[in-house]
Length: 305
Image (cartoon, rainbow, N blue to C red):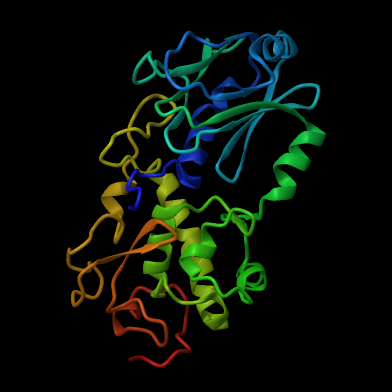
């Protein structure tokens, strides 16, 4: 049985969280508190008393992101690494519920008095790491960020793989930040069948995938991510994202394709995950005529079918 639980946040949602909490840069940490919670506990390391002691009085110097992780950078080369996973939120304002509040960091010296981590399912993690630990535990294990990777880098990384391209794009060790929703949207806009093996893709297809990867992710960031039907994902001030209104294929099974007008969106299962695509205009070879007017490049080297 396929788990249909929406698996956000992905890169656009985490980048939205990062931008949303930028106002805390310059604030000092007064304390870190783990509120009472009867739900499944999150992984928080080190234990809260040590976590609090190491952070008290220290200044927040920057807010970064690594793939799907928010990096709260603290003076003395410390970083709070927050991985929201399926249902975690990084917030400045009151959380959706008090029952699922996992961590409260009390602040001074700025406009915001707190930084919160809320997680309905308890699958997220919060870790306090040194610079050396960030490199060994995170940077060395992640591929190039999806917003930064070039077509040549993507092709070099994946072109020998026999995995389906949709499956390969989800591997964070190859390219960091893409999840199920955005992989489907990227491949739709690229006109590439998600079942195509990586070693069967032509150089121009890698260019299209990379171009659309950057376009889709930046557009999703502009709309502050996707809040799906369960309503879990929220931005830093507890508001909804709106990119879900712009999904072309995700969760649109059986509906007409918005691009070609000929096909109906199909759902298949790949590695226990739902994949949505248009069987008419997403092709393993060639390019459907419906893409010609929307493509960002100056030419289409493939034959039109």
